[in-house]
Structures are given as structure tokens and as C-alpha cells.
Image 1 (cartoon, rainbow, N blue to C red):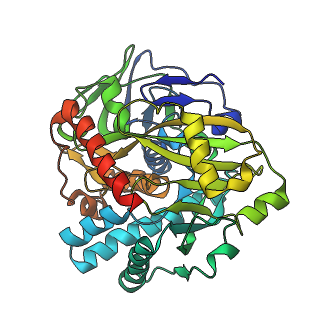
Image 2 (spheres, rainbow, N blue to C red):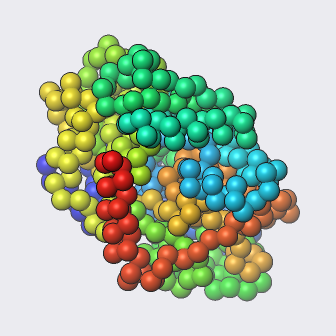
Length: 434
């Protein structure tokens, strides 16, 4: 199987193979004007554009590739409330108890927004509720139980403990010691969801230009966003390109670019199995992830494939022998799937911050940026787009709450942050093994 490996991106996506994309929209080749120019057509950008258009703003949406080409169309499809353990701890350290609860509630509202849009916009994206956090050994089980108790006490989040004697009823795997079940989180087909949002944005009047990378944003009272062949003059800009902004224009947001790190993450998809076999593998078909620092995550697709992810790379390139490595990880969890062929392998970049907390804010008074979703973007990124739209419309309280989170740039700049993180990952891999 030949795979394209360029800048850590592997192209043989089950998601792309299971959708029919509309014809690409025209690139921006002229000078246009709008109330708002949104850069990046992933969840955050499309969500902001849709929300603004529904409020009567004129919106231009620029995408360097195609809608959902980046992490929004490549991720594990796991829709998880919260911010990740590091991010939640950061928010709780920096905020009062009341403000930490307000931030958590925004993540819950992000889940509600996703469900509401699926229903209201009739997006066929294979939504299924249920999510398992899995501990591989007793030490990690203790930490998982402490987290569950804290989430129940601080946020009244309904979680169920699954002990060693019960976990075999949920997963046909001997790898895990215990688990926590979250009935509110779940999973879906991420590219179908993003394309559905894009179609809704287009129907609402958003002018979408694919293959239109933004190279420069000229700041001022009326910012100008320039592409290779055109430009958009506007009153507000929303930057939602995450790690890809620097790929196309180093001058767009240098103040915040160093606060996120591109991390490659990869997935495989098996051939379809019978529905009875799939049902026996994962009772109720939840999404699942272990709690290791270098984690594995997996779920069943609607057509009865196992979708298995992990193999995070901090080097900027795809791991060697990717399919063999991923298949080995999969068989460590489900050795009974050794007879199934691997039909797809793909991946790309997600953006993480040093503290795993989201990074939203303003550059000046009229340029908004949304980044740092750190693996929790499927629900939170859509909510971030809504918060940016709220702020542009004059309701900035919840946006500004997240703007108060203190972030630091990765040490050493672009040259040193990658080798430093590679060394750090070796340390955490050793900890996971203990």
C-alpha cells in the first residue's frame, strides 16, 4: 500500500473514502469586502462563519485546501466534554472555583451545540453517545477514579465507574484494568459533520473560497486578508487555521504561533467485520481511549470497521512502518482481530498548548484567534467559533473568560521545541510502561 508522507500527513483516509465531496468552490481571485473574514474551514472557522451569517453579517471564509482538510476531517471522531486533564488543572489553578465551573459549562454547551446542529441542520454524521476512559493498570486506575470523583463533585458530571470485575462486559479485551463511562460524550464521522456545517454555512450566505491560503493579514481599523490572487477587506478577522496558519503565512499571527505545537496523530481502519462480531467487541459501541500519556483510542464505524488511532509523532514526520506499528498496537488491545486486513491508514496534525488548555483571544480590537484545542476540538472548536461570533456581536463575556487563561510559548522556538518534546515523550513513554 503506497501512502503519501509529507510534513507528517498520511493520505489514505477512510473518512475521505466514505464521503462524496461537492465540487470545490472557486478560489478568491478578486478584491472583495465583508463584515468578517474567517481564515480556516475546520470546525472553529465554519462554526464562526455559520453563526455570524445567521445573525446577518456578511462573511467570507478562506480555506487553503478543502473544507475539513486538516484535523477536522482526520481526527478520531471522539466528541469529549472538558479540556483534557492538564487543561482542566490549569484552568482550576488560574481561576476561581466559580469561573472554572463556567469554563466547564462552556464545554458542556459545546456538546449541546453540536447535538443541536446535527438535528436542526439534518447532518448525517453517524452520531453515537458513549465514551470510555480506560486504565491499563492499577496505578492508573487510582488516578482515573480520583478524576471521576472530582468531576462529579466539582462539575456534577454524570460518570459511571467500571471496575476490574465488570470491564469484560464492556470490552472484549484483557488489556484494561478498569474504566469510566461518560454517557454524554460520544463519537461521529468527523468529516461528514464538518462538511455538513460547511453546506449549512454556504446556504446561510457565507462566501466560501477553497484553495485560497491567506498569506498576510494587514491590521488596522479595516483589516485586509491577502491570498495569492485576491484580498478581502473587512471589519473583523477570525483566525481559525491552528497549526496550518504558519504553513502558509508566517506574518499572520507571530505573537501566538509559538504557543501551539503541531503533533502528528495517525489512524488505521480495518476491513468491515460482521455486525454481531462488532457488537461483541464493544458493548453499545462507545468511543474509547486509554489514559496513558501516549495513548491509544478506538471506536467502531457505522459499517463495522474498527478505527484505531495513536502513534503520536512530535518530529513533524510520519512514523516509520506506520501500518505495522499501528496494527501491532491494535492487536495488543484486540488480538482476536488478527484475521482482518488494514484497508486505510491516515493522519495529520493536531495543535496542543503547553498546558493543554485552549488558547482564544484578540490581536488588537478586531482580530480574533482560536487555537490550542489539544485533542478536545470536536465539540470545543465549534463552541469556540460561536464564542468568537458572540464577541463580534458584542457579547464577549464567555470569550473573554477563556482569554484570561495564561499561556507560554514552547521553549526554544521552532528549532528547539521539536527535539525537546521528543525527549519529553521518551520520558512519558517510560512512565506509561511502569
